[in-house]
Length: 555
Image (tube, rainbow, N blue to C red; front, side, top):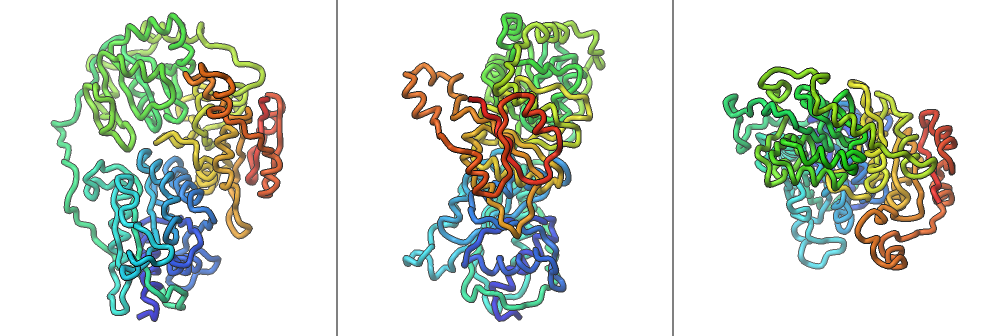
């Protein structure tokens, strides 16, 4: 038995999490979390001791950035390999509260995170002990499951940490037998009490007990007779592919001869049915006339980017929704049918597959697109988006910041060849701008591939601390392209722009006057500024070899 019960418990927890597929651990420094820090220092070092797992350890100073880094790592795994949870470890107190923004995003976008927060033991709670707050249940409904783990006792037998790990991983991955909320992936919180001593004890790593999960509750089993049948073979249908839709959205559209309106992060922006310029179409007289004639809208994934698409969904005479993200039960209330995944019956018409060349309805959308597509200025947000997307190939990974850049990509991005769609990732669960730099770093570290990120200047500054990567940590092959227009100019296209210009500038556009080159120099990050499309194309011509920033100055 270890002389330090907390240290022994921590080793069992780390080893058990690794046994259930957790390979990446993001650690923030702190004393109360010391038992986990010592265990991870051994398992994440260059020469782990006998019996210890070999994990990927990432150390960050700021808990908020660390949480988004973990989210990015998890998103990178899901996009290019096997989905697996990522753990983030903090000490007690305000450190825990800093995780909330990333936890909210993970909850809404269905990303498996394990929040391992160290806490004071029960006797130190509610008595004014330093750095002690109400951590139990702090994330409320934003986690799939939470547990308050009592401090390990000296005579405690092994197995409790392994049981916690098994259940936490199963629920984080969305095992429907372990999650009576939605059965979708998401964050899990383990609040871990640790009692002194908190230091390393030189203890032995043992093989963790294997816990067999036996479902005690779950979602109803769907029987074959419950599965939805084919979609109605109406002529004037539209498929809208939102975030996370996948290639199946293209298959549905092509099977029915319907136009496909696919957002950049849908993974479906490809093929002959895809209308790349759909935003210009919906803004044109011919497009508005087509929208008025739509009989049925099929939404796959979660569309979040444009009001014209939301209006098309809202006015749909018949609306069918599938795979609407982690919160699939929050699909539009007027939907005629909502299903968690796209059934195979939707991949054919009930009167047989339609040749795309025979669809006069699709031809009308194509004609409208060829007439309505607006020109892109020689230098501006659209030109930056075009140049950025032009360098992406099928094996590439891209991260888009919310706000202006992703909307520019939505408007001017290409339609890909089927099977050659790059992985395009964005935090669209809550569509916030926070944590984007750290998310991009995490994606690049998880995939191991050269990664490109595009974001605005406000988004970049909001998480500029994500550039802080210590000299002992792995550095990603990541290029961050910052479209710098001097503030939040996205508000110019919203109703707020009708207010007096001085008010709009101060409380919406919020000019910052920041010197991005000096900021990058302070973090030791290579920086280059460009002022034309040609210069940007040259800066993007080669894959990134380290973490670097390309600033596209638009003013």
